[in-house]
Length: 83
Image (tube, rainbow, N blue to C red):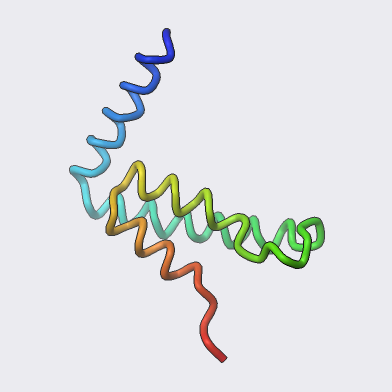
């Protein structure tokens, strides 16, 4: 398997996922839950200035594989509520 075919496979997977919107939004919610759980699990190990570190990859991967809508959903869910 070459690098080009690996990239082609990722794009094909993304296109197949994006053709199923309900699955994409479910994956976005699961990605958010995973990122949130990971954030609480590594809270002590992360420096104080990086509260959203676990959410960046979740947003990027969701937007790439599932599209803009699910990417925006996970980004909005990642913002803490205003006090």
